Amino acid sequence: MSKIIALYNNKGGVSKTTTNFNLGAYLSSIGKKVLIVDCDPQCNITELFFASRDDLDDPEASLPGTSIYEALLPRFKGQQGAIDQNTIELTEHNVYPSMYLFRGDLEFSRAETYLGTAWNQAVTENIHEKNTYIVLNNLLRSLMIEREFDYILCDVGPSTGAITKSVIVCCDEIVIPLVPDRFCYQAVRLLGNVISEWIDRHQIISQSLEPYGIEPFPGQPKLAGTILQNFKVHAGAKAKASYIKWQDKISEEIESSLCKDGKFSAKEGFDLKKPYVASIKDVAVLAPVAQLFGRAIFDIEQEHTKEASSNGQMYYGSVWQPWKDRMEEYKAEIQKIAEAFE
Image (cartoon, rainbow, N blue to C red):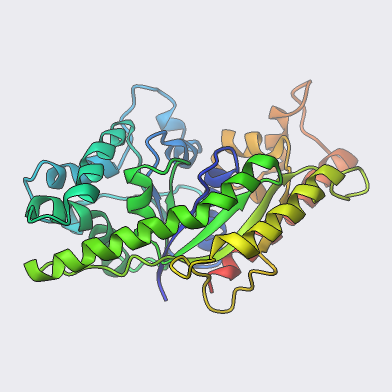
């Protein structure tokens, strides 16, 4: 079954973009057709996607493919009632076949106004705002069906603004990346209520669409799991005590707060008492090296270690082996995230 998925947390710095890219690369490596949609006006996943291409090193070079803002602008301007997926040009990754990008756009920040107005006025008799409200969902669904994607992975920023909530209500499932610290603990306490409010508002808007012959969409994403990210360990591979403390407190909060009102609920089979579908240790220098070459962290090649070496030489033997071990460990955790969607 094809799915639209987002990794989301209203707190920044939890490795959403890095994990999204690596998840897409892993899924493509096991034969899945994946579309990454850059819904964050910062465009970080777009930069990461194209980092492996030498022909785009020039900052003045035009990026290939249709941007999400270019695609949606005719609807925002009222020039089209809907967006035809046939007009969208997607770009295939040059290292990971079957992984495609619907690229980001710095100007997509302007969509905050268009989508914000739609969220506020779609309940009125304004047909323009009703059509704007459903446009993102309808476009993503048509791309998924017509181009036979197994997964659409949406990269979103940490905001709670109109762009983010428009993406989240389009999703079938959400995974929440978490860092074991005070701020993620506070975020989890709020996140269930925030998403439930979006779902509740969506249901109200949906009821206003049907009398005008506009088909609503479900707008009820399910929690597929949480990811423990970026925790640091001692030399003996044991997590530091401070991280364990916050991990335990966050686990309690996930069980008691995240899905408490029933509007935002966990998918069937997911146990809130065992919330972490994956635990990803701090990968240190592996992440920036992988990003330099636009590759997954588990696909760093030995020659790439020159970038981490103080003398510009490749790592060998006992220095290279720990890299290989951490890459395999990371890949195993990404696999667990992928399995959470099955």
